[in-house]
Length: 244
Image 1 (cartoon, rainbow, N blue to C red):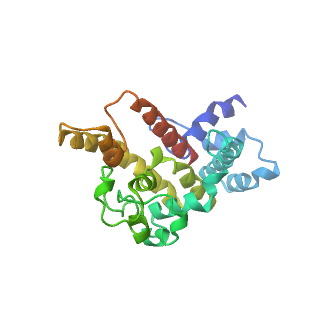
Image 2 (cartoon, helix red, strand yellow; image 1 turned 135 degrees about the vertical axis):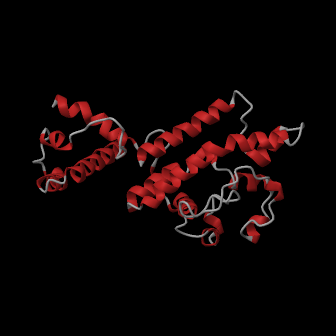
């Protein structure tokens, strides 16, 4: 059991990723487990066929799912993650549906993509995280174009990637790898480009005010208090990655 316990956290945290230089014997690990229970039928079936990697992945998915069912409702990641409203956003961002299709039911639209985030992984246009909402001409719908600017700001705020929870939900519901690939693509693009794009915007003018943050950048990298925002994003990044 000690041999099994020694590897549990590594396997669960890795979630299928390989670590260079780490030697792991899946066969020995599985032999140390009790596979006789009915809940282990799938794992046992793979092990009996000597497909130890598949058995290990099946066991891992079962453990991760159990953890998710235990605490998914805590810390604000409640059942609303699977509601059709946020999942509609995720399907648009992932390219499962087009923005035009998503915007058709205007009453359920909670995010208007002015950043070119939408599209299948690797196929979407390059994201532009710095967009002046006051200068947008095409809002995707005449109804959206008539919104007052404050409502437009709400509808175009990505809220520190709170939509991560619905990406996780849709991935686990469908098993479609497109969801986790797209979420990681968005994380990577923001992390690599948002900071630099922000300071390019700051350097364009010596009069960079709070309104510029409100209407254009949405993220203020100059302030110490931005640490709260960074922490919020990091929480969502970590939970999104762990959830996948």
